[in-house]
Image (cartoon, rainbow, N blue to C red; front, side):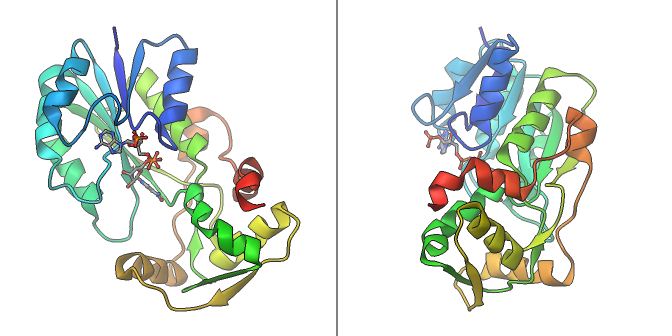
Length: 244
Ligand SMILES: NC(=O)c1ccc[n+]([C@@H]2O[C@H](COP(=O)([O-])OP(=O)(O)OC[C@H]3O[C@@H](n4cnc5c(N)ncnc54)[C@H](OP(=O)(O)O)[C@@H]3O)[C@@H](O)[C@H]2O)c1
């Protein structure tokens, strides 16, 4: 029997949430694509029997197909803890949150800042010694996926978080130039940032905004988990092999 259903259970965050809840003896089940397709609610329905809480990781960058699965979850479960994002402008997460708010479910939104794990995309460039991109002075408070998971685990396993929008961040806002330097130092290589234009207008605009006003830093991880959020340097050490 599953009291808690963790979606995205093979992903960056969900895998740690699932493992931590299991280790704590909580009856938990994980869902990844091999188990059910969130875009096809009928495939999820058999897994919802007697589930009380769902940790929801929405897998598409659009809320267009989110309504049916949220309605289905509301037929079975009491509450949803939704992995959302803290962003300077509304995103699809804003739309998914709205659907959840109107579903009748109890809810908690975990609005995370940028994931440190996004920098894995720079691995080839770090190896080459030069990382090119726009807005090197954009400051982001990148968060370790284990800290997102630790907060999620705490919220899933305890009461009293209904109707709360938690903003979760790493411990400090670092420029992209500093992030790249830290990645280089971690693997013993000098890596420099080179300013360059890039595609992906939405992400680039968001990055531009972080030059003027750095991404927010919050104390949510410490307040909820009792430990300081992991630094970007610690994240880099945990993932050093990917940059070697
Ligand atoms: N990156 C950021 O900076 C950031 C910041 C804030 C919030 N977020 C949000 O965090 C979420 C991603 O979390 P993550 O990084 O932990 O996930 P992830 O590593 O990208 O993994 C995605 C998970 O979702 C599962 N999945 C994908 N499509 C599915 C489908 N159609 N049906 C069922 N399961 C499906 C995958 O299963 P398989 O392994 O089977 O494919 C996997 O377990 C997104 O909603 C993102 O917007 C990201």
